[in-house]
Amino acid sequence: MKEGSRANALLVELLLVIFFFMISAAILVQVYGDAKLKSKTAHATNFSMLDAQNIAEDLYASDDPDAVLKEYGFTAEGDSMVLQKEGYLLKVTFREEETASGILRTYDVSGLEGDKILLTLPSTRFIPKEVSP
Amino acid sequence: MSKSANSHSPRIIQSVFVLLLLSLFAILSTFLVTMGAQIYRNTVESAEDNSNSRIMTAVVRSAIWAEDGGEVRIERFEDLGITALSIVNDFEGEKYYKRLYCAVDPDPLDGDPRSFLWESYNSEEMEFRADSGETLCELNGFEPSIDGGILKVELESPDGTKSTIRMALRTGGAGE
Image (cartoon, rainbow over all chains, first blue to last red; front, side, top):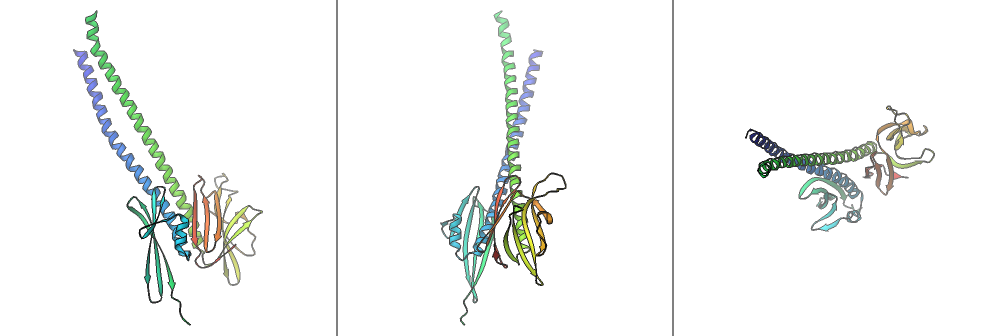
């Protein structure tokens, strides 16, 4: 009887240890998951920023921005152009503002992870109106 | 004999159950530690990739923007095996060259010769030497090229991460 109660106590002790271990494991798995997600987001933000900088510079320098975007592999989606990269999406939207002295063209290059916008980099170019002599 | 066997069987079952629980505990804890180590390694590798690419590109971009007023050229020094990105500025009739290039530091402070990105600033009369500049950051590859008004620089970090920088030359124009 005495030996049996000792064995039962050991069993209860073990079950308690495993119970607390399971709780700790559940918390740890959640923490690991969060760390992985944050790492993926940081990776996507960094590389989408490097890509967006390059694209913004190309758009700034080019006289034919559509050709530049097609060369990168962008495809039309509604009013914007999109390019799927590893872990993030690049999206370029275009707006034009006409002023008295010329046209202000702005290309917004955005990096997205799912629906979340990671960053937006505008590339603006002013095209002056031709002045008649 | 059979009575004794019957009294022993619950103890055997209990012992086996305890051993099974211990084994489960050991397997789960090993799995958790392995998974944690794997995630930690991936996170550190990813952070290293991010910082390497960001540092390399930021250093090169800011070095170019700092002197973008001049004429940007690509110079090849065949005897030294160096391709340099040169920005030429004119001050009171004298030309000054700011050069960015990749070369091995022949006399590093820690004694371990490694490849670095260098920046040198010389007047036209001074002969270019690989060790005449200052090291900016550790870099394995630096390959500049100019296409129209766009300067393209391909970079490779010491761990093999490759990055490309494309920059519109704003004021000085370009030459090869």
